[in-house]
Image (cartoon, rainbow, N blue to C red):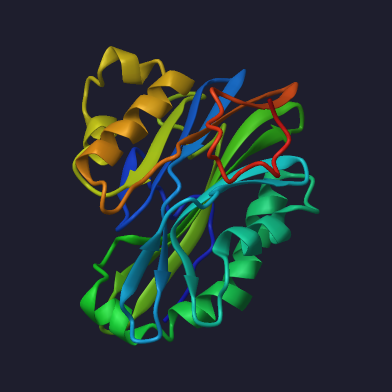
Length: 256
């Protein structure tokens, strides 16, 4: 097994396929970032089987940053990926610092657990499917910035995990200054984000598009993806909830 951390080697644009989650990050321009998520998370039992539970918050505030995480959330020896990466990013003042801190937490806390999940890898997990995705947003050096950190299974024999991060503005941008990134079960989110041209409503990359896209995924795969849907809009002035659902588990976040 080897782990790579570089801001250029892991270029995962558009959409990724995760077994059970729906997370989105849109940066349509330099004035706004949208983070959105469903509320279903995946946990791994000691025998390697997966369990799904709903009503969980995938969005968190980490100091000056806001983040959303998806894919694996918990396993024996790892109670919460979201809490782990949030604690790591909180003291950091730059996006590179935040992603580097998440990487250190991944290597010290998350990766050792992943390597023990033999039944999970052999029965459930496919090569090149992300195990962990974290999307981070905030103002870095006066610029509204979106960061990505991900870990995926590169090969089974020998088992090789690859991890890394990217930033927009920079290599994470689909086009200059612009990102439409999502991760979920195949069939809706990956297909529509990869479609060229995208539907006009989706290409606007606003909060309503994020909510609509996740709801479409819920309608298609309710056994894996579930509401409530949480949508956060981040600008240079701060963050606010969009059409906040009263059932949301994300009440600890500051916002409208």
